[in-house]
Image (cartoon, rainbow, N blue to C red; front, side, top):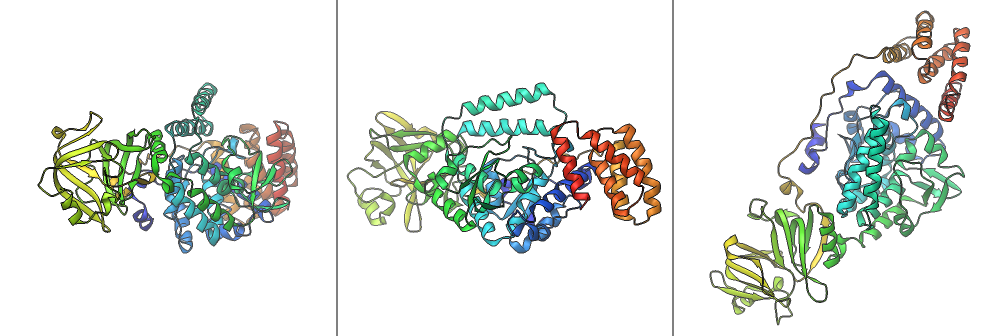
Length: 578
């Protein structure tokens, strides 16, 4: 894992935690085994062909929760790695991990009462759902490309708020300790924040593309689809339901996909069927052409302002300004002519921070004009040294630069920075910047670094040089989970697991299992999963027919609890009887 950690960019380190494998209980292991056996049985003929081979190739066992370090080693031949993360992380961060060939895996596992489906990320979904299909070359290419593009998508502030509210609500649902009042309050807060989202941002659109493909995608034809989406590959109920007539199948269409929302807490009423993974690669590349990253201009700057988060603004000179955009000044045509960031800002070129223009230099923000100088046709970034001299822009000599927009910069040039043959920054001392009588920069504020560029060609989420912008490695807090003494029920699950894995001695089974069954009858009258595990041992070894009948009778009674329990027991019995 140490090699993998070295591949993780600084700004992603804070999301990585230790798995703490010993914290998984015997009930957790039984939940994993039940879900995986169900899915393996069902998915053999309904999943994409890469699934079955990919399970073993990605280091995933049916019998036990995977060790993520071992998964990391297994995925290495496919140019992927695996890292543990702490539950929900922002979409752009999830995409950023994948762009670096790293599969982020939430370490928690769903509780027995949520065995069919959980809205919170868990290791069944992240490992068994996502990893196997990555062994397919074209799908792997799609996910990495998606990660590269998706990590640049800009969300609105309101969407960031919804994300936090959804994470809180989902964690409460899965915690098992939250009160009904707490859950209802969190749900209400999430719904109220969702109502405040009025803009369909590019981040939301690309999240929908991800959801309806990587998470809930089908491949083939609408009449004969195969499953490849992780949400379907990891859900006992939804995987089976997905290929029935109860779920509408729609031919994949990019525009329809990004116009179709989803509810993470509910089963999906429709699914999209792509013909091949190449179709998805074409779609995400097509979508990228609509993004601020590719389009630039005033509209893209406005997206950055609405996000209230770190973004990068790239001028036509190649200069990249990373920071939180707070203000743009527009001309009478509504085009941006000046922009301001607030807080720590860096200047970059070619995704590398320019020496001397890091956060320390621009700790309080950055502002600069956009556009052509007055009475010129040639952009300033393309001027030669001779043309600078002819215009009176000379190091150490007072100068005045008047822009077409009306912005005026007066001061003494101290440095001209060029990269790739283009002027990107001109620095001034004793500088004043004004626009229509408004002071945009005062000489008393210090030196002034003017970005050079006729127009804004790109705006994207995050930093141009993330290793420099996030220059300190902030590790996630690994909260050591105190080992609790197992409950008696957990001990019983563990005893059955040991018997299944370590003995072929019928005498041991015949002496131990009746006592476990008797205790289960009195101490855990509604636990159905351990009864199925014990019955499996009895049937496999053809022993204790009276106890087989006793367990079957108990399971029949438990079926009456509700429809879900009835379905879970029937599925479990079907597996052990085959």
